[in-house]
Amino acid sequence: SGKVEAEIQRARALKTRSFFDVVPAEITQLLQAWFCKERQAILSDFEANYHHVTDDQRLERSAEAGTMWGKRGLLRRKHEPMKHLGMDEKAVGRGHHYATLLNDLDGGRVWEVVQGRSQQDADEVCKSLSAQQRAQVEAVAMDMWPAYLKSVKQALPQAAIVHDRYHIAAHLNAAVDKVRKSEHRALMEQGEDILKGTKYEWLRRHPDLRRSEAAVFRLLHKLNLKTSRAWRYKEDFDGFWHYRLKGAATRFFKDWYASAIRSRLEPVKAAARMIKSHFAEVLNYIEHRITNAASEGLNSIVQLIKAKARGLPNFKNFRTRILFFCGKLNMLTA
Image 1 (tube, rainbow, N blue to C red):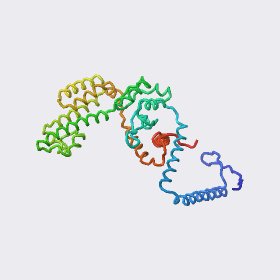
Image 2 (image 1 turned 135 degrees about the vertical axis):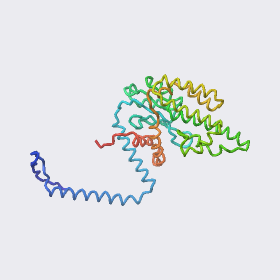
Image 3 (image 1 turned 30 degrees about the vertical axis):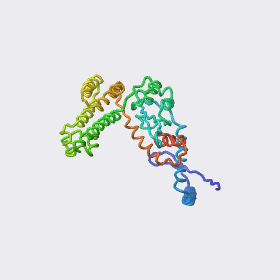
Image 4 (image 1 turned 45 degrees about the horizontal axis):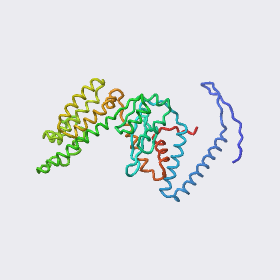
């Protein structure tokens, strides 16, 4: 660790005629030798210690490193404006243990994570936004969980609440499946098993029944079953999302709703009433056209983090890891 002194020479480029500094060759060689020596020492130390720790210890060290860097990134996070947010829940443990995630839909990142999914928990994630950020939010995508609805209406009164189209589709799919189960039981009592093993045929999309992959479903659909009628109501509602004007979308829904209520299919009628009770939030999609699809993608990454979270002893560190991987934090070393 000695001191090296050398005279820096000046040279001039022939083409640009600009001056630049030239480091003597012997100094360059000394620096290369020092770097190689230090690198070898680091590698030797790593190899000497790596085989003396267990996989769990390595995972714990990785978790600790992620937590440390996540905290550094959080300290540097700026409160940029966010127009479109997504509020979603994520199961984080066995039983009914959930976390509430607030996501920046335009930025494709997780902004905050709070343990639980009560109104108080939703209030906490909203408070993570600065007053200026809250004032700039235009719309929030979410499902119909009452705690989230109340919290966002209070914390972000100017923001439109948009019920996610994929959650609406899930409710309609559930209605179709209830009709299928009921009809299957009735047919089995008569010795008919035509609906046996057809659950996913009714849940998947069949935009073109003329295609070869829809051959099996085409035969089922021609039987004019109750399940077939329920599936048609589900498919017909998909047209709602393609409207660009609220007036036209409202007229479409009124026609669809009137037909669904006359369907004599109780699960379909229940789903139609549920959509009608939240129609203002469903209709907001026509203007803002946001969904929680980005949130679902982030949730899959959170699931991987949860699977590797054995080295994280508490939710606080789990939160930091989520923000480390999904928060797009600034990790540069200043």
